[in-house]
Each structure stands twice: as C-alpha cells, then as structure tokens.
Length: 217
Image (cartoon, rainbow, N blue to C red; front, side, top):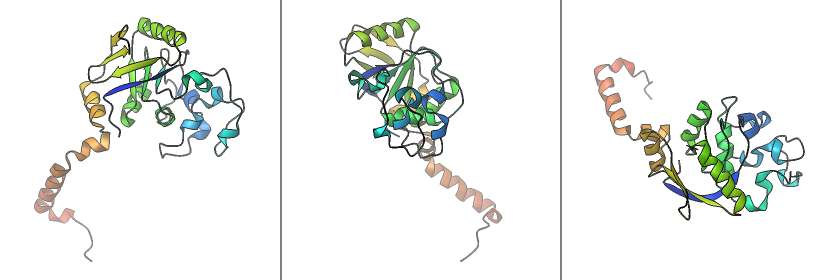
C-alpha cells in the first residue's frame, strides 16, 4: 500500500449529499476483485450520457459536459470534496477502489457512511471529516479559483490551503494514521510480526508434533 503523509492536490467538488456506493461505482461493474480498472467507471451514470456496461470502450462513450470530472478545470484532481453522508448504501469495497483507481488520494466531507469509511483505510485512501462550515468555505474557494489546491497533512492531522488562509484539523485514530503513514494494510501489518508467528508455529509443532499432518515425500 502506498504511503500517505502530506498530499497536495487539485480539488474536484461534488456538491451532493448522500452519495451512495451504487452512484460511485454501479453494480454491473462489480465482477472483478482485482482493485484496478474501476476508475473509468467511477460515477458512471453521472459521467456518461449512455448506459455503461462492462467491456465497453469508454473512450468512445458520450460524456456529460455538466459533470464535474468532465470539466477541464478539474482534470488531474486528486482530492474529492463532497457533502455529508458520503459513501452510504451497500457495503461494496469497489467504491473506494474506483475512487483510488481514478486518482483520488483523499475525500473530504462533513461525514461518511461507516462501512465506506472503514474500507477506505484498507487501501490507503484517506477519508477526511471536516465541519459543515469548513466544507462550505472550501466549496466557495473551489468555485472561485480554477486549479484550486489543498494540502492534506496526515502527519499533523490538518487540511489547509496553499496560501495558508484556511486551516482545519481533522480526526483520525492513531492506529489508522500509523498504517497510512507507513503504507501498511492489514496484511502488511500482520507481516511485521512474521518472525514471531514463525517462532510460535515452531514451538507449537515441537510440543504437539501430531498437528503436522503433512505427507512425507
């Protein structure tokens, strides 16, 4: 998992509340568990003018010019700004996969659905809860300044503008912060104890050799 310490990036504003996981990545695209290849279908029903299906050539599909991700000023955005209760609905891991595969490193909103919030940390995507007032301020800033950027500082648990005229702390647990700063998912965290696990298994088999039921040869 890629480390996340301090990220600076262009902000894309999605001015909607209660964005559910089916809107983030529609159900017909959930046939793979590879974690990659979902970015082209992120927000598919809002992003394109036709009905998307797996295997389509997305480069030939008609784009919705009014949708934020299709507008030139938000190209290469890596921070998504949204409203409250982002990621509600079904508990599909593909939703944060699609956001990350598109290129987002952080999502800022006043609140997140619990399962979506937890799933983000498993892949290194940072969900950042800020106050309603702070999010309102950022929406105004994004609308006013093309190419508007933010700095998401996980080390100090704060979001700030590049010129320093806005700064707001956010909450994230010490454990999740440690994992993101060190690029550790659940498997990586477990493998840090690999020597202890091997030593335990050796002691267990020495005391209970009948547990080793592997066939010789």
